[in-house]
Length: 475
Figure (tube, one colour):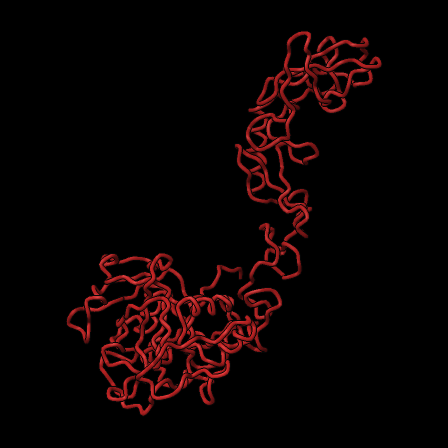
């Protein structure tokens, strides 16, 4: 039905623009044109070209006055007229200046001066067709129609057009959208890209494999280090705090609503030394350099280009915002925005702490006098309390975590609510860290606590985790 409608509209448009070429025995049309293989004789009747006699040097008009074409002439040569669709010439003696022909385009004009607007030689349709998928695998016979100066979508032409409608990772443009082997994203055999497979029995969602584990089962396939990711649904989240809440400072006010328009996935744990070691080796990078730490009770966590013994699963520390961002980008991820980080830590209920609204000792690795957890500095990032709303480990304590934003003194700019907020960090030398660290007090362990630090901050209490944002993919 759709194709019939298009062709009907095409036919109406065609005959509203140009006169139909006359057939044999009919009077020539208003442009002196006849159907293919015919020519207009002296009496204005269409006859076969071979019956048209002429005198050497004789001229006859050709071309049209439509669109970009003005009249020119054909010249008799060897007693024969050239073919009716042969290029016209200028007649300098008579002052006729011929314009055209040019390549036909979809603009409502007769660019090639053949008496037809928006048509193309050899097309099976009277209006111009543009080959959509030429040299694109099985789509090479797909065509678009030019209707009312606009290209329509691809359609089937004479049953020659084929499509599987889904990409197959076979080097062909199966869905005929002009792209070949774009991301599949929902196939366990091609999860996030061609031939990037999940483990047997696992499913693929948003370009991530889904492992058989109770919390945060998602991970990026095809990378050297597995980071399990927690799903953070798109939606509205309360960010910041009211003055009456625990340790609610001016810089975390006012409480406001943020809309996250996209579902994202955040690392369940902080990036570890072991994961960063793989990056250092693959990228020929170097380990972070730690600032002096007079309060630290141990030596630097890095020695001779390696984490010291026993720190393999501890969070990588002493890392600047730029270094953290570069690591995330190497995995196809990025740093979380402040809004994403807080939504993740506090959940839809906007808790004061990741585990709820009431302070509990030994829920976090923080200052020994506050948490009483028996840990002097960092602890294993892969274990610990995971009772945060979305299953994160160490959303409070262990290490402060970098966000992608530049610093803002408060949330006044978003008091009425905003969508996907991000404070531009490109011209802002000050950054934001969240979550508190192993040396923090209770005030720094709320989900809304935030600190301003230079972007080059490289302390032993600061690390990061990454966020994966799915690309829109085909099912």
